[in-house]
Image (cartoon, rainbow, N blue to C red; front, side):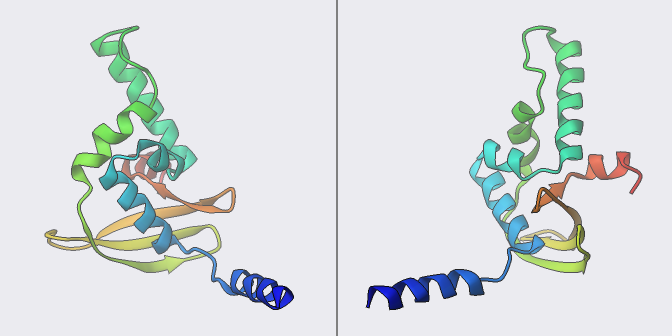
Length: 137
């Protein structure tokens, strides 16, 4: 009996479909709404984290050198949490092996926004719009 249960557990794990970009974005949006900066930070693309770090350094240098933290992690909730609306839908418009474009509809918004996702270290990560523009996309 124990062998049967173990085989059933292994089969259920093996049959799970991989988490797609839309699934990951839903997790990201929920974390942003909840104010979970650590999860949000971990789900951002490397380029997005670098952009936020640079923005934090610039703000700290102008506002209060040595007083304000100069890392993007501290900016995450300030930039994302207040604007994180409730998702109405997330649809994959295009997906390749390492990139995806999502149509994200937020409740009350006029139309869907496009969100770019990239696969880094085997996980889908969110590309913030500023990082998308500065990388030439």
